[in-house]
Image (tube, rainbow, N blue to C red; front, side):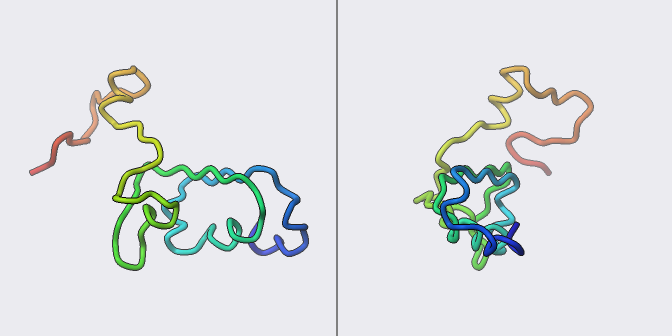
Length: 94
């Protein structure tokens, strides 16, 4: 879409939903968000806060606090995900 967005009026879209928004730290979606006058919903499971690649600041989340969070622990407790036979370490890995 970034390659052809200039073919559309800035008001063409009402809503932009971007999954894997942590890639926006590398300006994948940034130009698109700035060009269109649309509500923006950005989703990521892996927010980061590194020099030159910070998704918290990009989406206006001050103090490293996401707008909304659904933790791994909550997803498992709500039975949307199971950790059986997985190598996910909760609370840190050695």
